[in-house]
Image 1 (cartoon, rainbow over the protein chains, first blue to last red):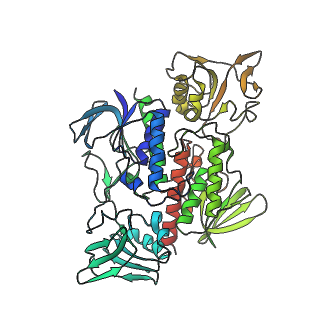
Image 2: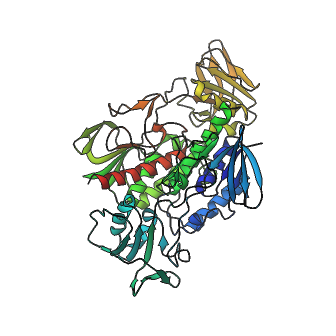
Image 3: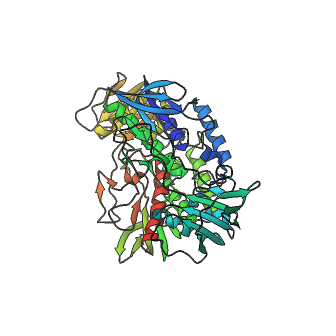
Length: 284
Length: 284
């Protein structure tokens, strides 16, 4: 039986798999051979130590080469359920696959609900979900921000530090003191428009010319993979060892909460893999 | 006043500084222009996502270039004390420097007590502190392991998976079942010998020919920088946001506990920087 099944092929899952292999543990990754849309579509990554100012596509290529060299392949299926059993875990997939392992690392990211018309179409071409990651691209430009939570308000301030004008549509109460270049929009956006990149946003009866759209949301959907999993505010609850409340099940990356950053995901994948090693040693 | 002082120039501190800059926060790094001996001396790093199989020296160079490009310099001093005051923190250095900031990130690593004669001399040339990092270099070779803690026993098993024979000197009780190629040594090692690399180890009255030495210890010294800091088993206690028990003080990297891995340190530095941003927003 496998030592571990890693669900998810973003940087958290890859980090976990590389470290499991370093620790001489057998594992499989269930995910996407293209790794992660979120990585690939990142316009530019500038705070990942060791890789200065690379694009998401370049990062993806480096990771794919590294996996190839390590002899790690990705099983291209979509996991639909994790089933705890006596001393092992079963994982079922949409394609009808069924796999068993002693442990599971959940690294499937968070689903971002996409609801403005055109949002999917322009992701990575003017639509972003991360102010910290992409804010600097909009120096002296005009942007539109949809923000669903008071907890994310500091990201609007962050964007205002770069942008000329921030048109903000806020879906929460108790709005704090924001910089003067933040203009509140009261209408729900209807459609993002553009050609190669975003050029504007439409509302009922009017439109705005803008260069970028930021959609700032708390994680949308809790994992539906494993019913008994402790999930809070859409994120899997883990301790400092990335252990969930279910025995033998660990989690890493965006699915455990913010910040949604490559460095954070990579670190958590590494820690989860080490925790798997210790778990296997203590339960052999 | 600065937003943040980062104490330590290893990967955790660098990750924190890069992300603080991305978040438009002012910071200084107090550390070493050569970054970290631990990084530089790493023979080979093979589980850091994005950088396949590089040496510590290469990694150091990449990080230095990245800092230079980001315009982040390192203040070459040694921090000796952190002093919480009303709404700010003071940091004093051995060189007589004194700096103030709204927050501090402790990223100074852990001190490894070096006690076998020759240990410092051969670090990175046959002496290692990390089984996961360097074990694979000793496939079918003979190694000596000094281990001080039952909690680290799984690392001996890890090494035995690669090495021909593991000569183990164990400084703890309740020794578990270890692989057959682990030979227990009862004498305290006196001196590591070699030329360019380790070739053997001496005991009173005898010696062994070996290719490598692993010194496996729990963190040696708790941080003496800040008296009221909550420290357990030699590591700074932090929550998932890298917040310590002292207001405005965060920690990241090896100083917060195992695994002592680059990926983990990088992730924690990133999270600590984001927590600083949130703290500054909430306390402005």
